[in-house]
Image (cartoon, rainbow, N blue to C red; front, side, top):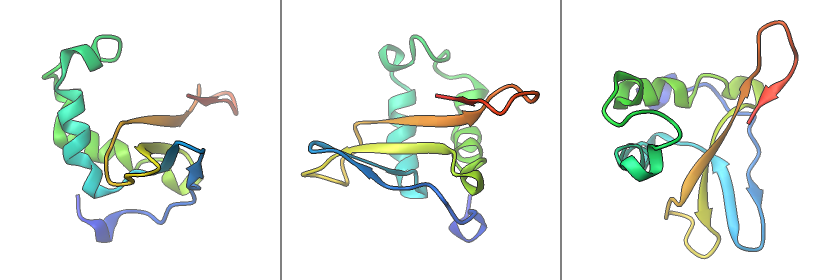
Length: 102
């Protein structure tokens, strides 16, 4: 995925005393793919090595809902913003509802 094709984000940057939650970037993908390759990390999410967790699929999903203020946030320690600890996401719920899924 090229950065020129990424939609503009309306996702806020959120911060606590210890953490920064910021919109996922293309630069985060290598860290995300490494996390998604760890069976312990993925044990409640998806099987490691599936097409759903390929780099292309993750890149496509990463930026799907950002124009609505949803999507993935990368979590970093406040003292080291470049170090990725994990991620969280907000997605649209069932099509017939206005609910958001965390």
